[in-house]
Length: 189
Image (tube, rainbow, N blue to C red; front, side, top):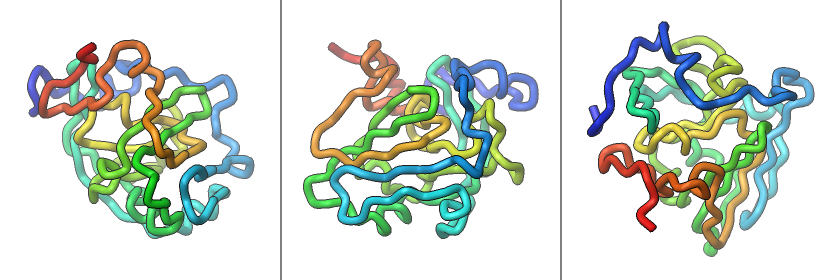
């Protein structure tokens, strides 16, 4: 367990003990859902839900750590490895950062090299079930080595960028690196 984290019972608290707010217009109508991938890439994408599901998928088991100090262990995620998406869009050499925009207006960003780890994915299932809306369904980013505010829910747009752009919580004093193993929760300004 990372420093200052405690394991919780996912069944009792997973859906209620997080700061996420379901968007006013949640992306539950999968016939209208789209994922846009743009920015510094060779191939721009706009995927429907069905097209997204046709991408190569995999499972990955990891723990999920909230900056508030709780963790859910042994989560089995199913989805598309971020590295698989990278192979499709082919980022340009100058693309060093990736900015995520969500249907509720939430944003976050990470370095591209951090997103290339095998356990980073765009997940649409958790423990064999479709991802619940309250947990970011139909699809969310999962970055196990970071606090959960880097694992954006309800992702609708992914932009590859030359320069870093801080996201919602990072602009409000949370650490941009969000490394759970270094207990890196607050910005060091």
